[in-house]
Length: 125
Image (tube, rainbow, N blue to C red; front, side, top):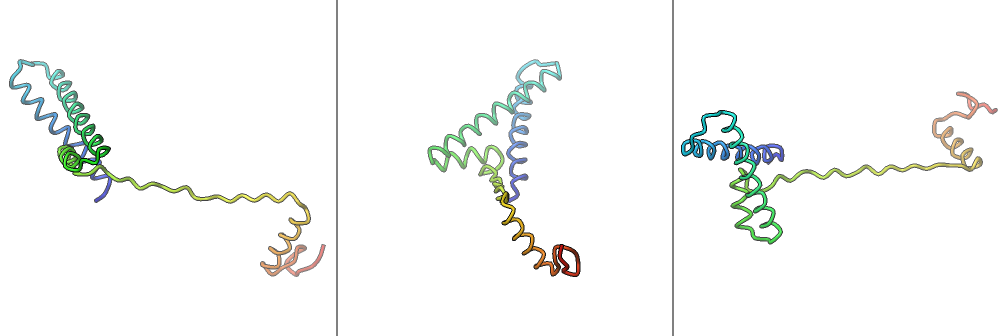
């Protein structure tokens, strides 16, 4: 499964649960201010996410697969997203400070190109 989709599901499901919990709280409490409801929603969603993400992390460290699976499902996806690790491209840098070595390398490059160092005809210096 695409890691981006997995990551989005694991973010959106806790917010949806937070919204449901906020509505349930709203029904029991007399909150007439819409901004207060939004703050409660955001707080509950954050608490929900932190709780179950923490449980999932702890279960992973303890190798307790059932708890890890349950916490992951309550976050919207059974497993945390697996991101591809980029590998750095090895870069080779070679400096030649020896004039004789440089002349040999240039002569080899000219031979490979089929021409001499003085021009296209292979002429000298």
